[in-house]
Each structure stands twice: as C-alpha cells, then as structure tokens.
Amino acid sequence: MNFINDNSLFEQNESVLNNNHYAAQLSKMSIIPTSDFLLSTICFWNDTSKVHYFTFGNSLLLVLLNPPFGMAFGHLLTSNLTPELIEICKNEIVKLGVFQLKINCPNISVNTNIPNLKLVEDLDDFEYIYQLSDIALLQGSKYKKQRNSISKAIKENEGLTVEIFNLNDIDDLDELKVFCEDCMQIKSDKSNLNNANLQKEWLAFQKCLDTNKSFNLKILKLYTKQKLSGLIIYEELNNEWIVGHFFKTFNGLGIYLLKELATKLVEQNFKYFNFQEDRGVESLRYFKQQLNPAFYLKTYSIAFN
Image (tube, rainbow, N blue to C red):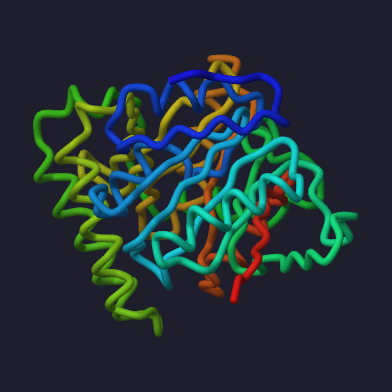
C-alpha cells in the first residue's frame, strides 16, 4: 500500500480490515483519531466482514455496513477537508449503498468555505478528552464534588486495592465476565436504557476478552476486600494518549476508580485520556461532563440523496 503525503493526490487503496497495513496507515497519520478508527474498537463492536476501509493520501475512510447503533455510514478521518475528497468519499460509500458520511477532522467548522456544503454537527456523537493530571489531582472548586465522592466511597468500602495488568495475562476471564454482566443487570434495573443496546455492549465486552491477545490492552482492576468491584480496560495509543474501552463499577466507586487510573498513568508520563462518547445517555453524559473535559473530539455529518 502506498502512502502519499500530498493530500491533493488521491490514489485510492481499498483493503480488508484485518490487513496489516491498517494499523500502519493509522499510525502514520498526524491526527488523533476518534476511537471509532481503532482496529480494536472496530473489531469489538462490528462484524468486520462488513467493514471496508479506503485510503486517499493522508485520509482514511471507513464504511460500516452493519454498525451496532444506527444506520450504515462512512466515516472519514482527514487533516485536509476538500471538495475533491468529499466527492471521492461520496462515490465510494454510495457504491456500497450508504448515504451518510461522518467527518472527523481537526479545526473543522460548520462554517467551512467549501461551496454548497452543509455540515451538521453530531450532537450525540463526540468523545471526551481529559488531561490525566487533572483527574489525578482533582484540585480546585470545580472538583469539590468529586473529592467528596471519593471520601464517601473510601468510608463505605473497606479494603480498596487497585492494580494494572496486561489483559492477555489475566487467567480468570470468567471473573471479569460475571462482574460485567452483574454491572449491566444493575444498570438495566435502575435506568431506562435500551436493553438491546446493553446486549450489544455485553457482546462487545465478551469479544474484547475473547480476542484480547490480538491487541495490546491493559486493565485496571479494583477490589473491595478481595472482591472485584470495578475495572477499566484501556489501550495505549502512543506514549501520551490512552483510550478507555470498557469502564464498569458500582457502589459509588466510579470517581475513585478513574482517579486511581489517572494517578498511575501520570506516573508513566501519559497526558490524555479519551473516555469515548456517551451515546446520548443522560446519566453518563452528566457523569462525564462533571469531570471537566479538556476538550472534545467531534464529528460532523453530510447526508447524500
């Protein structure tokens, strides 16, 4: 696969998702992608036989024909949005029977000067980016509620311990599956979340555990009196960025779990944590907003007739 630095030269390459070139192509891009472009995320949540990807110079187009949430769409990652690139992407996705193109591009604006182009911001489709040092320290009045939550959690839960492992070194995956299933059952009982969506999340979690040896994933496990009480499965994108794949806990330990993770990662000189999106779930949005994100990775959409 040829990689062309001049984004005005659109030499097209289409590849199957499990092609070794995919990770190499993504790593060559100078853009921080949304987690939707990570091979791990794609494999956990999608039928990979129904995922296509194309490269056009420095741009990457994913086409998800059977996504877990919503209708099929194309998803473009680019550092230089041009009319020519949009037209090429349109032609490719329409060939596959898809008519919506999502765009992930830094410095994009809905007031872009591309003629006759109307981008619509995906209000329920953005990812939360935090500075790990902020979560590790929780300083200032804006984090008072979080500090109080941690104090309460420590008082109500004795014998709290945390440890980070490589996920592929964990022998007892059943412990993780049972814990996750219990968390989802509690979430289902306490909220109005769509059970079909919870089922998709449960299947994605199982797939993550079953295919973990294919990815360099880490897990932070939280125990209360030697009983598993929380976990975060995450991936190191480079020497600065972390993306969280699965976050599960109960007993009011969510903030405590995140602070412990952030503290350990700051010690390893990581800077940013991508907590992914909230998919419009009101309670999850409130929780993530209260953590004061440093910024957001946003997406925009174009619908073609």
